[in-house]
Length: 378
Image (cartoon, rainbow, N blue to C red; front, side, top):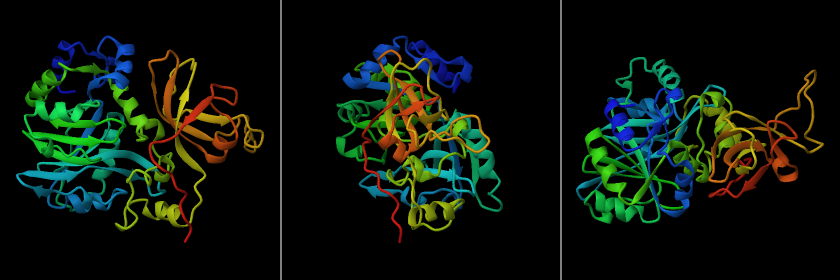
């Protein structure tokens, strides 16, 4: 975390999770109130636990086009008056077997592409990308501590943000995935049931904006912000789940994270085969776990109590898992967690799905905020 920003947040009441090298704000001293605030008022969050990889150079777009699942050409600048408009996008970085090594949001700022992803997989992702640079005219670098990344959300977030930036509403594009550049800040419109923005800029500009927005907003910890991603059905890949999910399992086809027309990229053959010829047996689902004895973790196994699915692998002593936790965060209710989980579709429809064992806490499923479709055979 940027030292100046770190000091600023602590002076504002932030409590850091030092066991994660100080890159994550646990809360601002009132964790339960902060979770209640998600449904009742505007919230303001530091997102420094999400790192940034900067990709710059004449061949940056061509390089990324050959590595990622989405069409990087859609992250392009267009001019509207004096304000450049762009798009951000969700994309995945896959292994040759078509499984996600990272899931990221991509945006542009000052002719540089930025890949936003969890810090715990940033180094591994950066090192792997560098293996394929070869003679490409690009530079890849960790920009996590160069720029500050904060989040702002609430029913009145668009109007208040416009006022704070002293700009007209027409200058902040509030359509999903839209990007606006105002007063040296990059503003990303993010998915959510209420207006939600990611804001990126240098320390001085972000400190000034934070002080303005917090007058009417509740500062919240990183977990509260991540809970909004869960509710929006946006997956995150961590170290524990790298190389585990094909992108369609994590619903990237439903949230615009895969292009099936862009051409070749690492893992493309597997991803395309699943789309055109495959039958998807597992999907990411939104669920709650009540009375959890401990916090569910990414990668935790899921099981079912259904007799047909409580099967054993040959020679194995444990029941076969029918899925995994993708990400989880606590709610304002004691012992309750909201989770995104990749699970066997039939098991979820026909049987109880349990966390940790076939008699563990039950997952109660809720509708996702978007529609899922089975890959169609052609």
